[in-house]
Amino acid sequence: MATWVPGRLSPGDSILTAWSYSFILVAMKVAVSVPDRVFEEAEEIAKRLRLPRSRVYARALEEFVKKHRGKSVRDALDAVYGNVSSGLDPLLTDLQAHALREKW
Image (tube, rainbow, N blue to C red; front, side, top):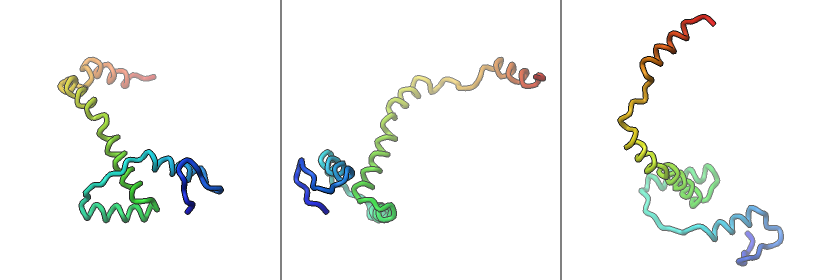
């Protein structure tokens, strides 16, 4: 592995290497407690996918954040429209059924 000096790449470093260095510079380092079972499963996944452990955890956290990002918007919409029927008006249902019976 090339020795890295901040702000300078070694000859022969790839664009991916340059991106990796910039990613490392902007990434936040955290310490978390994970149940043993989850840790072991994550280790197996990292090995199978040939990804660094930190990338596996970062992807999992990205998916979690993405899943819950719109939750407050969804909750607000549910509060407004939660009691409103989503069914069709009975007259429209009858008209649709009638149209389907007609020969085209």
